[in-house]
Length: 564
Image 1 (cartoon, rainbow, N blue to C red):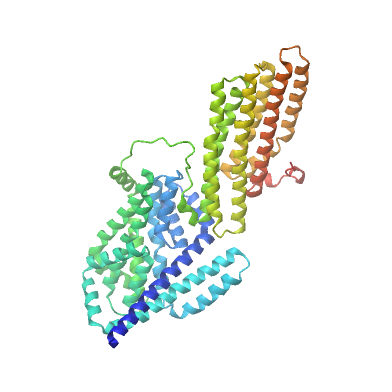
Image 2 (cartoon, rainbow, N blue to C red):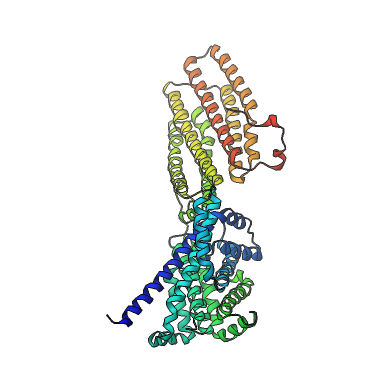
């Protein structure tokens, strides 16, 4: 085998190895950033309003945190699918996402070769020896950055000999056509799903003098188009609103590239003027990348309404399909990569479960006190959607629990699991306990008196009030409502005592089938007592994970929740 072939094989192996190190480093860093910045991402996106500047800032900050505009857009698609925002609200966030990606190019433009091995060492041993999970994730962020820098250095070493290979120089010469260079950047990013890698390669090529600044800028512009593929793939099978968000990403990036492709020379000149005197070509490329994305974002920011209407025109609403009530609304698998957001989605799904159980409770008294066999069977059947949705929630929380979770998130996961289980148990008390009692009432020809029905109605209303309290605490993530439910114990106990006294009086009454009637009535009151105990247990769980309102936090010590 000739020396030329050996050299070509060595160069190819080194180049591919550098690419692999870069991509693996990006994966490690991005995964760790999602863990560390998950709560911040959730807070930033939750506080985003219809204000387009706030949305632009949110998109830039979130993307800078996780270093992937594709991931930001995929998350937005999931939020829209889950009903957490509309496609119109997402437009400004998508515009801001491209600004956040410019941080990678700015960092890579520095001569970071000397930092690679020290960062690898610090990151590896830091993550290995860390006692807290958050510190371990920070170590993995440093480790990932070290691998990215080492991958860049490896690619530089691989490409250095290529300056003397005519065939390779001829191949790069075809990229002097800026449109072809942009298409190459788009294709490479679409295949590897990493615009940062395309930017890194362009920086390496310019640093080695293999391509000019204008060609490198065109490649970077094309990378913005290639990154749209992830969002489009994520939108397949999603609701129309989610597909529109992905389409906004495509339109914005494609239109921005078409707008600037004829002004690459001017963009190159502007990037050189923005750099300090004597700055390297990679710095000029990073500046061009930043200028392009920032200018585009602010240019299109004034047309967010028009963009939104355009995608509605391109993708009109489809006839609505009625989803079964047990189908999850919020449990998007894409959220599992960001546990903080996945747990918030699970919380919203538990709120959905609350809605189903609330309907059962609302229908319980009319059915069991005086309902027909058909109404009783309908009450029993209402438990089936609860069981199915509960199973989906538990499965989703299990998947989230397989990730590395900080202690706070683990506590929240366990709490959500307990609340979901308690709600499912509560539905069983209605579907089994109350339904069985109602069927016996019909079989034994028992008639519940108006006075007893009124007493059961008071218990029922108090249970519903407690249920609404735990649902409010779960929805608002505010322990104040949960504390209010805990403090309902004394009032409910008095109602139970009144019910017991009433039943003793009714037992002495001269009425037909008195013993059978007494048994059925006691079953009903006891079941409501069991339901109320479960609701107080849920409230206690909520108090353990949700923040207390400031005025509640100042409550005296003797107002602390009592043990069951």
